[in-house]
Length: 355
Image (cartoon, rainbow, N blue to C red; front, top):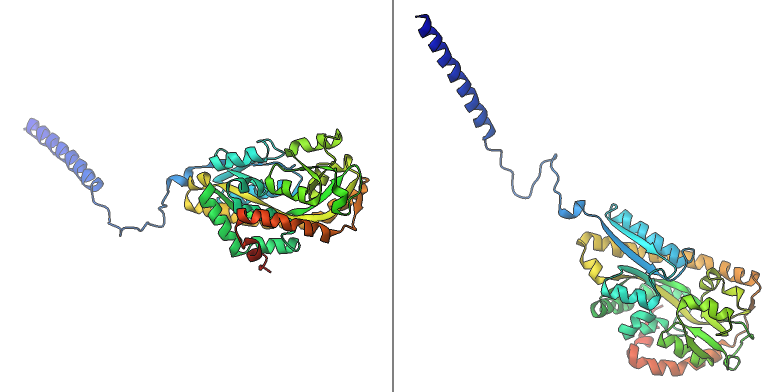
């Protein structure tokens, strides 16, 4: 009898364990409440692969970090990081660390360097309408140049350039009014330019401009200019006050001539290959950062220009104000005829309608 009771008790215990196990299994396998497609609960978050990925890119330029371009490069990097919540990082390489203008732009076009801040000479070698932005006596003043850059006519040119050479202009800005500096003699008219060897960027329209003004152009990479001036290989150069001052050209020049022959612009460029590698929201953030950084550079360049002129003067350079500018403008007319076939017939007149 006792044995029967023990056996019965053991069987009951086993049955209870099996019942509990079965309940647990049934509970685990119970179907969850179905949610409509495309919805998430408040506690859930949708994570895409890009949410966890960080992109690191390079920006190269030829100016010092203290130059408005250098300050603008850092501002651009800061804005990109901010607008992408730290997911896109831009490392800045100033002062020709990644090469001269040609080296840097070629690398951007190939996608080996992601961003750059340069002029329009190198893009113009691949897309000739960009030559228009370096035409002498192109804009009335610096404010007019900024309005030109923000006009749809110019944006259409930039869009076409991106399609043709895979480099996108995302931030055009005022670089500075280009003045002539010399070591030998003051210049007031084209006649005074005869016999002078003047350094220019290695870009055709700059060479043509200095030739039209009456001097002998000497194309030269920017990092070589100071030594060439110091050794007398060249007699002078032409650049905006910011470039002249931050590179201390006043140490090896005696005169600054206010020719204002080119109202210069530069631009923040992006490799299309780089942009296309990113999610759309990051592409948009970078373009927005380019526009904001360009506006920042405009403000810095405007505010600093007079200060740089004073710095040049305080370092012993004589400023030549009474320049026969009309004579230089007249000399530029032949250049317009020469280059119209390259930048497009009627384009100069079309842009000059922008007020």
